[in-house]
Length: 503
Ligand SMILES: [Cu+2]
Image 1 (spheres, rainbow, N blue to C red):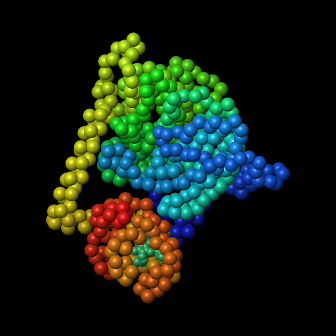
Image 2 (cartoon, rainbow, N blue to C red):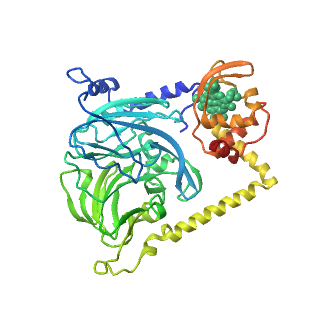
């Protein structure tokens, strides 16, 4: 994001806040009060037993709810902005509900009163909120949960209607927040619970828009033109190409009934969801609870929608989950696997394996090739790093890259020429504190810094949040700072940063 040229970080937040609110026709205050207060003036659900919700990362699902009464359920969800693998050799800075894409799975029961806490980690760069489609109220909770970095919000809602619902961030620009991975599922179980099955899994499809073409390596950034044109570079299950293949494939045994909780975060594409070689015995279309369709081959799931599929696995083998708009599956990543083990049943299926035809580069051989290639790339990089001529060029490249990182974050507080802000943000220019101890300096962007320090004879006692950058970026920005504005020089390598991070 490059819309902010703040002279102070708080001003940046105010600008964003104003921008976000103008995009909502919902009164912030009024909505909040209406939901928190009860006619009798007492706190909501004071009479109910209190439970802390178990939240799970995909593809896991929290255990079924066995209680047969209502409860007050406390949900704690933390927003983190994290750089992770999107495809082989491709990194992306995801904005996450709980540390991964999709966000943590939430499971409550019809009639439960949900006390929702949205916490935005201090390392985040922008504010976020949450719109849960399970909520009846302004913005699905968005109006009450707008949360700046380092802040926490709370609101309470009653889960009135059973169903499987998408939740997502609704902070402007909304398509960008969703494109960065800000979606997940909340299941409101019907009062009597769902029928018992042997396995439950959580899968969400999402479309991603990177400035580089599909497969182009390195840290990729969000491309707003492609997003607006709905031309994704990746369409994936569970936040990355290959997140459900190889050792990460879903598992089941012959004879078991599998239930998939499937959602589409979007922001733009619908899914023609299909499992190659299976028929869904039952589908709860659109995540609703009233109609159950039987014997379905492919179910259409809208953006911001969901479906539940149940099927018995009768024969062993690898069953491939796809969006049956198949270019997405074979060229953009919307492909996962369910591996079923157990005895053959020649009556149902004769046994000829077709894995290689269907799986292509996601087959076991493909995954092994990927791992071997990654190992060789790492070895090549090591050999390059130890060549002195290349080392000199590396430093220059680092300086330029580091400047970009500096302008993305540090300058908001330490100012464009590292001069700082008297009494508030210490200078990085000619900083005796910085130059005195390189190893200590590496830790500052990694872990943050607070408490009293003295820089160039002047006292500071403020908080610097940890900076959510990759090891490469932190190495680059420190190298840039150490070689700018009269500092002592030297360089920091990604290896140095990794060492500091691990210690
Ligand atoms: Cu957001």
